[in-house]
Image (cartoon, rainbow, N blue to C red; front, side, top):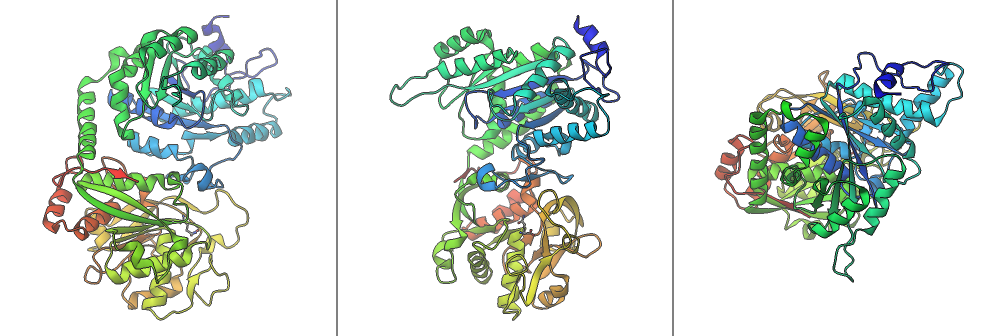
Length: 599
Ligand code: GLN
């Protein structure tokens, strides 16, 4: 059967055919190209970074792109995953709680994604089981092949239709050879056949080891693991070799020979100083040209758009690399030993630092170690402090002690989500005379619950997807610090993930004592941003939202810019020169020199 015949038979579920490939309405086979990225040898190769960088390079060429991550695990989303084990939970504008890689895609591609861009086995299987109950499979026994694989293919094609992308980038979660993602690999194998030649490009990331005892690169693990992909019926078009050092020609030759992939399509992808450098590294290696050729897209490149986009991006990298003004930002949290739990905060600081020309060093401070007595020891050397989001009561006293210190000593402060709730508790206790103030999350029977459950959360039981989630508009008070930072905006959009809120019953009392609630929901009910007047504190801002989730390299998030600016001033840089950098175009700013974030 030719692939044209296959195409004409798919889309039908009937007694007569073994194919079960439901097509979404409006789908035109062959219209959309697909790039599928696999990981071999081990996890942690940076598949998301690679895939998003490749998507960026194609986007710069004028193609519209849509990324999707396929996770093998059975959770329906990432909401119940422990950030200590899996990294931060990234929240999309539509409220989807997903893997931190989606943050990498949003930042790299400067686009907002939705639940269509994130699929787990849990979602696929639930949907198949629901369809079975509704008689969706015409009396057939429901099988992994073709029904579950059919569901995977349906989701990919739905993304192609809704996004209208020229190229869909599919990141396969896990590693080739994992039991749990075998059916997903099978689905893309089937689909590449159905879509026909020049519409699929398979890219295998692999890892080249360099045991210190040998002092040379060895390709055997890569060879053996690439064979697993062959055994699954997939012959990669491109192999990208991850390694700490550039991969030698000899090693690439061996991999080319054993994997049957031409040498010119076996690339070295060694470690580099910033993820944002990788698109240019891919271009330098020629991976973009290989993808364009394989997909037959050569005559559709917009060269002028590509040059402009590249120049803007490279400008960011240059400023990032030439940092001059060192500042230290302290992050006070519970998961400080695992940087991935704060991935977007680290990125947002880097973006703001780059914008203002600051070389930011991060100091990780474990909140469970902080007390009123030692706060000064921990905080004297930092120029700014972030109290990030969190859950539960562990380490809360340390965070309250931290906020008390920074409020009373004029240390620039940004509170994020739980950080805002902590700021309210601290202010209530120490500036409002509410000595027993607390959050119902910390003490359910607290007599002065200045932070309480959101009303709509009161009846909810169980976990997963049921917090106040996703993007919401925030009204900013005219003239407030946060409004000025946001370009005098009166309405901005931020993303949320919380169950508790500032208790409306205490808002007047807190405001009378000098706290300013400068951002709220459009109906004025939920307090979403607070600040102290600049006459009382150089920079004291907290938000119920997660502003780090919407910071992008070329569009740094204003609250982070405000914090870094105040930290620069605290470090001794004159306010005039910081303002000069701030007023510049974000993509051009840098009069203070260039930033990097190290940790
Ligand atoms: N635990 C708090 C709440 O549920 C804050 C959540 C967070 O920081 N993301 O409201």
